Amino acid sequence: MTDNDTFLGNIEAEEAILGGILLDPQAISIVADMLPVEAFCLQAHQRIYQTALELYQKDKPTDLMAVSTWLADHKLLDEVGGTTKLGQLVNRTVSAVNIDRYALIILNKYQRRQLVRVGHEIVELGYDTTTEIETIFDTSEEKIFNLTTNKQDKFQPKLISDCLASVFNKIEQGSSPAYPTGLTDLDSLIGGLIKQDLIVVAGRPSMGKSWFACYLADYIAKNENKPVVFFSAEMSQEQLTKRFLSMHTGIDSQRLMHNQIYEDEYDSLVEGLGNLAELPIIIDDTPASELTPTRMRSVLRRIQSERGELGLVVLDYIQKLGDRAAGNRAQTIGKYSGACKDIAKTFNAPFVVLAQINRGVEGQSNKRPSMADIKDSGDIEQDMDLGLLLYRDEYYKSDTDDKGIMEIIVGKNRNGATGTCKVMFDPSIGNFNSLNTE
Ligand SMILES: Nc1ncnc2c1ncn2[C@@H]1O[C@H](COP(=O)(O)OP(=O)(O)OP(=O)(O)O)[C@@H](O)[C@H]1O
Image (cartoon, rainbow, N blue to C red; front, side, top):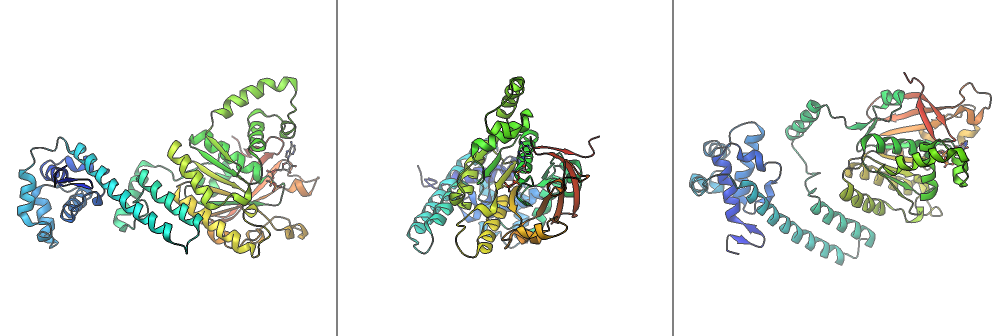
């Protein structure tokens, strides 16, 4: 190592990159996406690189003249060492051929600086006796995770002009921020399950909430081929797996629960097992008393780093969490719903959270629930982006015309309309279908 190449920085490599950018019009496009401004350890270098980036983002040249003019216009030329410094950068550089290799060198140094910084922060957290140990572990794990996945800039404040560039790109690509549910009428109402949204699915017991969650999990795993994580505080891994198996084989779930199948169902069983085994569905049945937001984040982080972007997260169900004997349940549930919204945002995935409805609706003549009927609703209503209330008339009236029908009432929709749609639902095998299937 020399004075110019220390453990935490390599001045020569930084100069070679900047020289390359000033010399070669293509050079900036090679490094712009991989190198954050802070990767340069000298402030003058950061300023020059930042200027080149701004010019590049406005489709302007990044040569010596353009960069020095911009810096002079913004009274920053002296700060970086004047035209002499810029001239030296160009004169010392032969070409930008190795710019990507230099970029990797300084990225590596930058990551080491970050690691040292985070290490210090974690040591300080260790000494902080005012913070609960669980929070300290969570924060520490997250800090390291952000480093290893290079996500440290994900939630940086940005100028609206910078946000517009990415919004425009997405509009141009036509890439949807939502995953369709496969239920046509529901999709026309809600536009699919939107990434980063907290979606609360509420209903009275036995209304079909768990089935609906299984359906969404299965559909998204199948169609998006992205990991779907199902936190099941209610059912065990085995019970939940049998539900999915029932959906894939058409074998009555009640019999599957008791390991009873008919002779002629073996072929469907084998076929269903094969299909289901292909799906990236991950079931976590940590008991409710231990299923904290910290635990969920930790599980999701690991899955995301092993399998890539998450397709969906499900929690069955929110009122089951925490100490049920402790006072102020509304406050506790509010804390959990806030954490769930935060998880949806951090992991850039829709988060479907199941919730129970108060018994009070049973006393009403119209037993369709409303958002206010959600048990211990606390802050759930404010936190959620989408609120779906499930209702089946046949559950209350055996002579109903709506046999085999589930109503999905969109009680809250931050991104669009509210209303009701009907879908076909077979609770024996968890089958959901649109009413209009043409
Ligand atoms: N094999 C079966 N045949 C007919 N109906 C069934 C079968 N298995 C389950 N069901 C029905 O499915 C419904 C339960 O669905 P699900 O567990 O999804 O409801 P839930 O809303 O999650 O209920 P809870 O809040 O009690 O967990 C009940 O009405 C039950 O009678």
